[in-house]
Image (cartoon, rainbow, N blue to C red; front, side, top):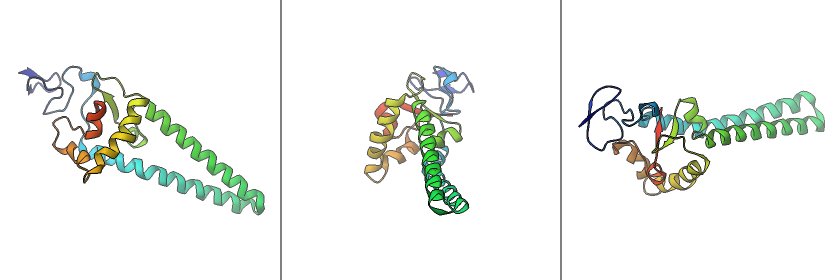
Length: 166
């Protein structure tokens, strides 16, 4: 058995992550595995943030339309709303390309590959758009798998060999 470089606990042979502190055994610089609860929080934020953003866009657009009045005000509000929506989309795509999502970014998490490098755009695309629907197909067992897997990986993580770390 080897010892964890972070907490000095005994680690079973072949394990990538410490069973006590969840730090990566090979390279502690990668960080520690994110807890299932924190991952759920990021998922909820990823659902809520676009709804809040769209609500603000329509609120601001409607406020500008009311303040300016007439036909021109509605166009200015719609344009501003559209520009804010595009800005949010660009921000989300930049985060996506860096291996995170808005919810994960706000909670201090990122997605890394097995070798410790950040997941790139293609890896994230496959993980989010192919892997997550697969994880949710059969009673969401792929997501529940995170609770029972020793490395806190869901099926979407196993598909592209990624881990979510703090």
